[in-house]
Amino acid sequence: MKKRIGSYPHVRIEGCGSGVVSQAGGVLLIETARKTGLDRAISAALTPWRRPRAVHDPGKILLDMALAVALGGDCLADVGMLRAEPAVIGPVASDPTVSRLIDTLAAAGDKALTAIRSARAEVREHVWTLAKDAAPDAAGQVIVDLDGVLVLAHSDKQDAAATWKKSFGHHPLLGFVDHGSGGTGEPVAALLRPGNAGSNTAADHITAAQIALAQLPKRHRRGRSTLIRTDSAGGTHEFLAWLTKRGRWLSYSVGMTITEQIHQAVLKVPASAWAPAVEPGGEIREGAWTAELDGDALKGWPKGMRLIVRKERPHPGAQLRFTDADGLRLTCFATNTTGSKITDLELRHRRRARAEDRIRNARATGLRNLPLHQTAQNRIWLEIVQLALDLLAWMPMLALTGKPRLWEPRRLRLRLLSAAAQLITTARRGHLRFACHWPWTDVITNAIRQLDALPSPG
Image (cartoon, rainbow, N blue to C red; front, side):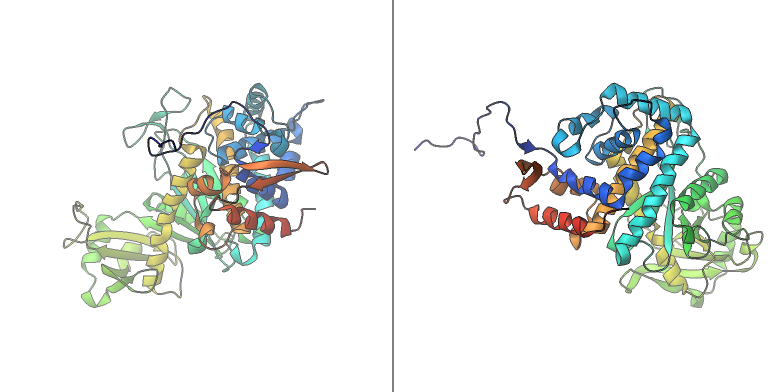
């Protein structure tokens, strides 16, 4: 018996084979696009940009790009991974054809963006209906988080500029619907801005909020059932006035900068008015207290606004700011929600930190950089990224349960989407057989059964 040398068995490489599909778990995203009607909606929306006698449908090209990004691609050429699997993906356009479509849509400007966004909004409403109790609005309220993100540029791309962190790139403003503790989140807004765009620019927040609201079902585009949540960048007079304008009446929970006026109001709060902050499970948050401010601190702000402040012991090594008091870190936010305890409202606002998770997922799904040179082209790229994130959010919402429902894109790719399978043709139909020894084959097959059980669109 020959003794093995090393920790791993030696496997011989014998060239090419056939009948094996790589990234076969991607059929979960394909089936999600088919069952939700996303493929038909995008194709219909981009019909005006289909040339006579064109071989490839613009909607299919754009959706193929979104699938490539969802599988881990970060440039247009990565669509080649789909081109290698025609039996599963179908015909995929060449790289020059993909580039020409991006240029064509970029030249169309807002008209093309509106078409893509309208298709996504139409499908989103259908997806939430299919999801039933798992939908983001199942509890009666939709929470939209707005937050900025810095995207670095390593070349002189259009509108790339020095950022407030002394880096170089762009400063998009993103919006995500929060799925709560039972899910992840889905994108509803992506506003591309130069790197030197201000963090608290009210006009940009209004534009991003308008884009986000247009993505929601019509019943949630106005009224208190929709909550807009931001950090202190959204705490401006203009943005709050827009949110509470007559006929719009949106709920809000926005961070506020600790001004000298607020700081003095905090110092006047009696010790008996401070209530212990709570954790998501209901237990008391150690070393943190909340209180509501009134009086002069509310002058000049919209009617009905509540100002809630939290003081907390800083983490070890954290530096205090001059606006902190008595060695405790102060944070403040404003809301127009009534009938709830301030501890519950403070916990709800603190959950805005989930937006950072959504941004991390976006970075891992095509937003690590903006691969194109022109701003108009990168605006189309942001729509592709959002389509990819939509698929990565809708598939778990419709097909996964338990812990897999909470998996983020990187884990979905590693465990489900990257799984290989054997392609078998029987009665002129292709069948994928996943390896029995793959630890998550049962998750894949159960998810496919869940998707198959959904009604077909139309």
